[in-house]
Amino acid sequence: MTVFLTTERLVLRRFTEADVDHLVELDGDPEVMRHLTGGRATPREVVERELLPLYFEHYRRFGDLGWWAAEERAGGAFLGWFEFRPPDPQDRGEVELGYRLRRPAWGRGYATEGARALIHRGFTGLGVQRVVAYTMAVNEGSRRVMEKAGLRYVRTFQEEYPEPLPGSELGEVEYALEAAAWRPGQEP
Image (cartoon, rainbow, N blue to C red):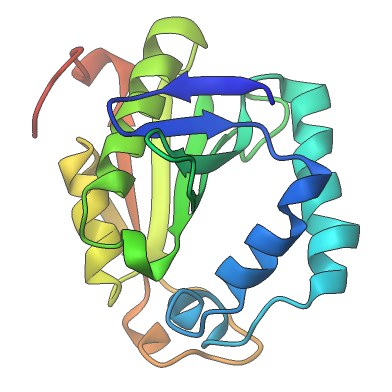
């Protein structure tokens, strides 16, 4: 197990083949997937043949910029994942922050704790200059995490969906934080 980052309550580590069941369970919860797929589960074959290989390829190409399995530090329970990767493979200065946690982990501060730790690591050790994050405008929980992690609202924009999700008519939002505006340990 390659540990990337440890916080007071979390361990962020590289995914392994042994995480298939964790990802299938996570993406099988309709509430977890509500703002992503309208509640549809990700099939096991997609996890095995597309998602995990994508994560492994990011580790190979980008090292510490990719997707990270999140576990409770005490007990090792799988909580979900964090994404901290460049949307443009040619530009490692900007990374996208994302997170997907199991429902029992919601409302306990794990997403904010992990996001803040990743931002700190990015700005102090990975050469990141800008962190961006996106969600549906109606996803208040995710927006609160972004704000608590120090990101600020940038804009609302429209995405084209082949199958629009409830609330998609209100658009997507972008939040961002520049390295120059960030200070270690800052609280919003």
